[in-house]
Image 1 (cartoon, rainbow, N blue to C red):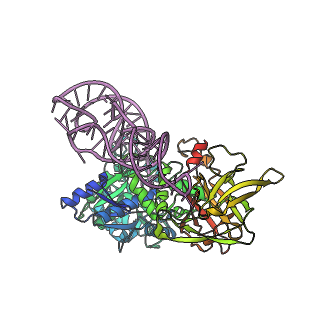
Image 2 (cartoon, chains in turn red, purple; image 1 turned 90 degrees about the vertical axis):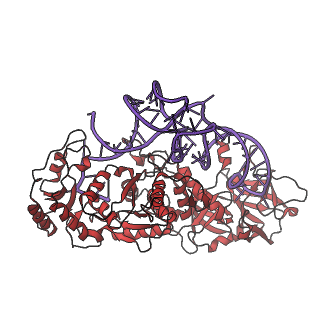
Length: 563
RNA sequence: UGGGGCGUAGCCAAGUGGCAAAGGCACCGGGUUUUGAUCCCGGCAUUCGUAGGUUCGAGUCCUACCGCCCCAGCCA
């Protein structure tokens, strides 16, 4: 009764789906569970899909089963190969392996077609000539039953001939469909003679022009699961109603097995929108720079932003699986990267908004080497050296002309420790004509090299710094939440785009980083001490002109205190 | 007014009739600290949507009511 997570084993109780899988395994019903992740290749994967991927692949890992990657590609008018490739890349990047179990629903088109004829022969499906509009009208409403189609009682022979005609391209798009013959009076609307096949004159990304009829989800999904001998078919809550049809198809046809569909609640996060339609709108209307904009919660956006696959897996592990629709705080996701990166990211120093400091009593031509730890809690990550010289940069907000008592940083007459360096005391400062502070003059205590003093005097504040002449110039993109309210699409009357956060991206240039950052690889996360986690942007950086993304800030109790 | 689901703390979430309602996030205190970070310690539901009922005993069973989500694509 335990699950294995990346940070070791935990004794967390199993969620309700794992309990079922566990029981089925122990009872011998399904010694080897087989699950599947069935994306439609019509868009990019997002954090919500990650939940499903972690669930399906996670179960197969934990119970010694297998998990298939199956593309649900039954709608050629919306699907494209580019999406197939990006989805495969994203699943792999998240750390999962479908081995040789890569499938496409379109691979089953021949078999699916045969099953459709089988249904016709059994008198359980018919070709209907009603228009889309008429079908809708005949379907009835939530409270009124539907009425039978006039084509409902055609003979099996006639249906077969018509259906073959559909397949052979004898009829125009929209003129006829194949429908299951179930019950137009059923309380469940999905059972009111659902459409199984429609005519679509579009070329399919895999089957080309071989077909001009395509099966719909309700017919395809259950049979694909069956053909792959899926044991547990996991999907989101909105498919609960479809389960009766899923079961009807498999019960009505002659099939060797009958997978069990189990529904769970999809992921909702505060301060964002999750629907593909809305994400697409953000891209199309250029509110973001593309599907992989670091502010997007697509897998590719998160990857570029600097989220680690492990942090996403841990996040999915943390939020659990249930059946009630819920909202997870965005903070939980942010915390997941923080937790992961805190443990692994090397620490470096970077000054985002530089303020020049001149150490008045430091020899003008001297440069010293200062040893700094790469990770205070992990000595095994080693040390590095930093150049120290007379002119430095510190963070502009680490100085206040008239600081309050609780401000532990620099102010006139105040002493602070330069991390791993010396204690310095501010003696004066220069201002420009606008009153903006331009240069700080400080003195250093030569007896405090490394950051400790022999007399044991207390220095409350430690600030980061970079030697001016050795600094690497960089641009830094500060990212924040894309929306400024918890539920951007919470009120139907209000456009969710009205809640876009104008400060979701702040571009800083002229940032001063320690020299080691000159040769960092794209996508490798480091902690800029006291500020947050950053990584070199894979798309915007060019040789000699590095661009860093802020993955997430550090927790900041000082900011909280200021409020 | 039909059908399918769901209601345990600010947000997730265990709990499968019986010792005192797990755990995480958030929040609030305190300690350590050369990152106002990390880490550590403590606090945080006399009560499980509401009202009845069954029972020696109910978050768990029964009844009624209330609230929220999903379903009327030839989308998935």
